[in-house]
View 1: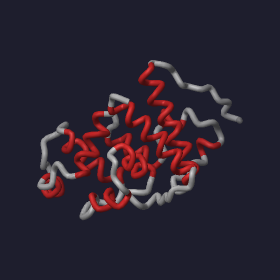
View 2: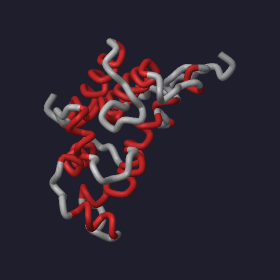
View 3: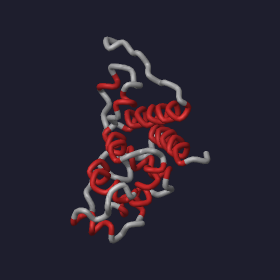
Amino acid sequence: MNTVRERLIAALESAADALERGERYEWGHVGRCAVGHVIQRLASMSDREIFAAFERTVGQWREHAAEYFDAAVGDEPLATTESQREWCATAGTPLAEIYRLFHAAGVDSAAIGHMEFLSDPRVMAEIPPPKRWKLRRSDPHDAALYLRTYARVLAAERSGISTQKHFSESA
């Protein structure tokens, strides 16, 4: 595991394993949702450390990533909004490092939002119907299925292999 992308794939698989074993999962908790479980493994942080890193910021990964991801990874000028100016005063904090890890693995703010809501179209296409339409972000088993499938999609992309399955829409 020498690349961040490979570490992300391993973190996705490990998070899925943990959820399948019954590790605590709470969709509304930034350290115990799908993204939180991946970060626990990718950044070696506890759910409490992730929660503490979110102190005084918005409460969902999708919202937070949309606001701060680009500033953290240097894709836009820092401090273009008042909230970013306040946040940038603590740049280098665990959240900035988390976003830099995701960025190094090829994950952008939209992908973080999809991971939180179990909604990436590339991943959903790999889950057979009718389950793909019935994923519940509050269900740890659905989150585990999504994370494991996401790991498979990323591994296939890394290898240049198409994972596109052709499921019958009536199945």
